[in-house]
Image (cartoon, rainbow, N blue to C red):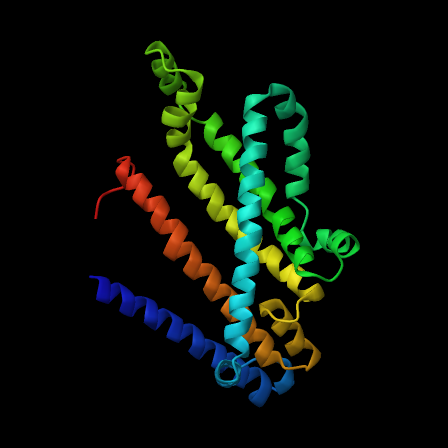
Length: 260
């Protein structure tokens, strides 16, 4: 069954690649609507990926970007947990701080780049700052929503049995909010990964964002497309290989997802 599903996925992506090549050939060679250097093509992207891999550029770029994203994401999780807990704990902050957080969360990450440059200069700290600002508030809102949506009967039952406030959070509230918390982390990571690209295009000397900008400066559309595909693949791998697996494991433990 798994092999059949894998084969289906493989045929799907092969079909997309064939359609891509057909579109490129039709637009550039047959109809002459697009200049060949202005449109990426599968063979050019493959050659570019081989070149970037063989000279070590791709490995160093992926490693640097992942380390920046991880450090910024961990800081964002810490800040998000604190903000989420404060909003839940104090109704005054919920009324006044939550709308502000909602508004800030709608800002594109690129808006924080000028602040990052002015406050930190063209440094690694500036990139991490953009990542944190791009993801911390989404995590805070997810934590607040997860805790608020806990069925009240859980808390009332624990209080009836004499559970103390600290134990109530540790044994009832946090475990019950864990699925929503994992979903918030997954969303926060996607925000952090996008914010990383905004940060890297301004100051990084090594990284996927920098490699993307080098391709732009050299008018190498295949390099630009190659980096975009790498960014997409890494995002999918982390989402499916870490967050989705963890989320499904927790849901199965709670009987909320069918056991395989």
